[in-house]
Length: 297
Image 1 (cartoon, rainbow, N blue to C red):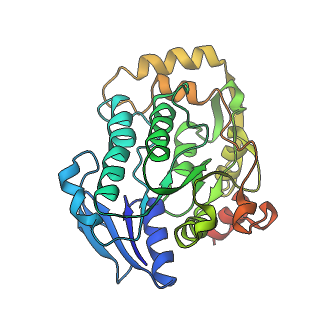
Image 2: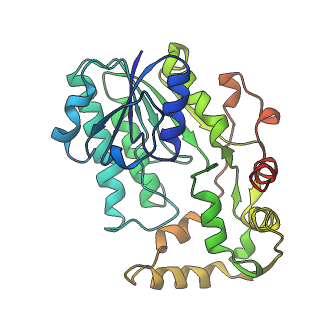
């Protein structure tokens, strides 16, 4: 099949492009600067910005499936403010759907996010939820993925953890009790490729998470422990953390803000992990400890 991976030079996209190539597909990666990234040999590239329809439209010609991975990080405040989430996630998805329909592409695999909802408490999840509605109301066959947090080589979750939780004396909002269900990129990418290839997953939404539910404090202890550093959590009241992040968010260059504070108030875990729909069992997925052990060798 001819597969267009929109946002294919990002963390998940580069892994997915390699997986699809290994399965024998013709892969085109669309991004703003495709020549700046190390892509597997054999991948075709196209330049475009999902917020500018005319720049991406031509790449959809002759494609059998489109995978939309374009995303801004929910972990950091985007440059340009929270309205960028709506420009990129909602407006970008509208343009992807419009281009796919214009060129007769039958299917879209959309990367959303856990707890995506038009009425969610953060701009990121609101925009993701509104984008889901655009996809569901389109003429396309579609598959929607709602992952928790994805970790692996080139990912931002573990560097983020180090940034917000320094070793030794570690102040964490609410004592770091927010729970995460991290999934390794090498586990979720084959599921995305399965969704590209098979129509049995069409018109379904899948919540996808890893094999364990860990608090932020537990993640911090594992990450720093892999480097021989200890973590002694100093609980910071959530209300005080909220004030600090809200004030900090108004300072140019400060990486977090009120939206990130709101995000820390609910767990990033699945209500019903759907990995079984892709023939996987939670017990067979890579744990964070296993990954960190391999990475430290």
